[in-house]
Length: 384
Image 1 (cartoon, rainbow, N blue to C red):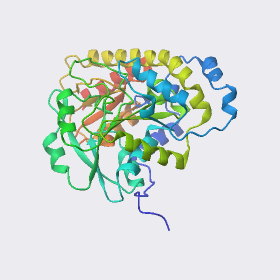
Image 2: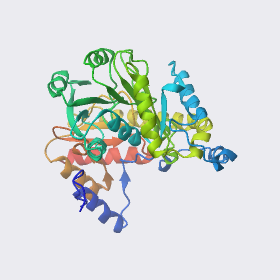
Image 3: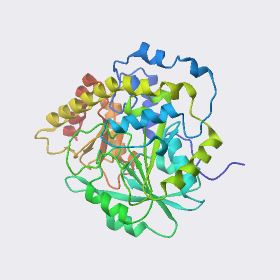
């Protein structure tokens, strides 16, 4: 009766079941997984945001497949403020980064074709690709004091059905940015690049070799994705965008506009408010940047001299990755921390780490919760 695009096993995992049981029992939980900025205690200019959405143009339906001229000009201004010249004609406005992926997979791939995706990374790719009948093929990121692309493995994965290479820049959860030498090797392959740059504004360790965005790439067809969810801490506005660059960008944009015209999913209020929302979101972004940096410093200080637990190098984003002893599996560590210490963390296998044992913490967490949660986590590791 139903399609086979997804594995339709909707049973919750052990950690989800344990979390439900803790919450039913009323146990106070220190949640070190918070990824929703609207629930993380930041100060939002609420009245001004609502006022931005109240313009009279929100009452009219004026569908423009690529997005309104005002919205695309606002996105172009966002890049201009960061030193990049992006013409509005290169921009397609979407309802979210997930929708951008769906449009791009429709554009680039036929059913059964392949896209290369990083591992470890956010687990959504498997579902987004499967829903478009496209096969995601992982290529590894390797860690030797810093993260890098395993080009030998990536190049072995290329074949006649490879339609795109997906990058997450900086990666979620490793926080690693693409480097200039890596970009040169990728563009030389001649395969379209899809660069997810939603966390690009959150640099935790500046470095001259970092590539903050691929919007200036000329050598190969490239798409850069971002949106209000992370840029302005406004996931509820459901507005994202993609920028096309490089060879065949004009032809790609013509086809993307046709795809977008089939859905017309971006709301008029969000588009007409976008210039103001980007302006107002700057204060939220600044708060997020301060907190993620401060929490990372708290984590590093807590780990000082702690030989059994290591924070892996992180260059940007909202997350930190811990390498912990393999005395338990990641799942057992996460369950023990939740049930014995009331601390919620994410095990590395949620992000497809290819070995154990890793835990992922959100640097977006409220400072007092983060500090106490890290203290309990390290105490649990000391207990073994």
